[in-house]
Amino acid sequence: MSSEHGQPSDPGYDLKIRVELNNSQEQWLCVEVKNQGHPQTVQNAISQLKRYAEKHDPLNSRYLIFAAPYISPEAAKICLEAGVGFLDLSGNCHLSFGSAYIHVEGKPNQYKPKREQGSLFSPKASRVLRPLLHGPLKSWKVVDLEAAAKVSLGTVSAVRKELLQQAWAVESEDGLRITKPDAILDAWAKQDKWERRTTVQEYSLLEHDQDKVADQLNKLFYNQEHAFTQWYATDLVRPYAITKITTLYVSAFPEEHVLNGELLARRVDSGGSLRLVVPKDEGVFLGKRSVNGIPVVSDIQLYLDLIHAGLRGDEAAKELRDWSEFSGGWHE
Image 1 (tube, rainbow, N blue to C red):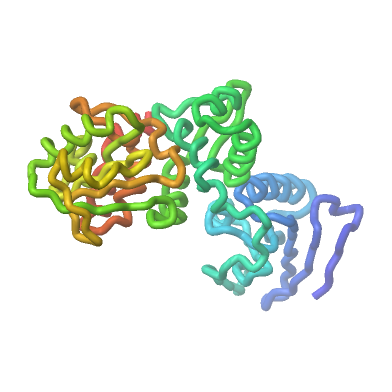
Image 2: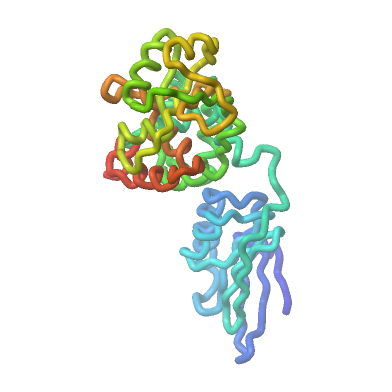
């Protein structure tokens, strides 16, 4: 085996390795190395590899490989679909040429950057995702996103950069447009932790009619930001399975005597039929709407609040997301 690195005849390869196969034929491993394995980086590298390969190497003797410190599952999928091998320093790889076949996946990132993907779903950053994920999907100018998300231009720019790196959005003169909403919501749901972003107080109620309870709560909190979520909200938007728990986001908890006087509510440690929730960030109220006069969180927020909630919340979340009108409709 011999290697050629940086030779004038192969200006596009970072590394070219000659391998002699069992049938005495030679195989050239043509490698492009990048310091990041984001999907966008992979797409650009594959295009570059193929362009150089077509000029310099016969099709039957070349095998294209992308290499980086870490290649995400999304980036690996792009390589496989393009017929390109990959390997990273974290231990993941796919090499298939001649009689050789090596495939390793699932190794964690050993070279995490200072700013991890999870920050895309931080409270402030996720505010930017909310208007972007409201269908029908459209292009957004940065200044319009700033106003809609109620965040700084710097936050909008950081989210824009990350979405483009992950190849989850495209940019044109009309602005930024989401192209893979399902991939974004899957990643968001994986990162989301209800207990980290909320403070919850539970109450026992004598009244069991949820519509009456919701009507009373709506009147009680009329002078502050509030919106229903989880099972009761789902029953209003996309009924699935009735669960006798009413969950309401509020800006601040009321005095106990107020709830007791209005609803005969009694504070309990767990198992209450009423949950009042104060969010750590009021981005949860963005995109809320009125359903039969009752304020309800956006479909995106409702999905996130249900998917890990238990009590068949995951089933209700799937039913909601499978709905053709979910979040205004994502597919043309």
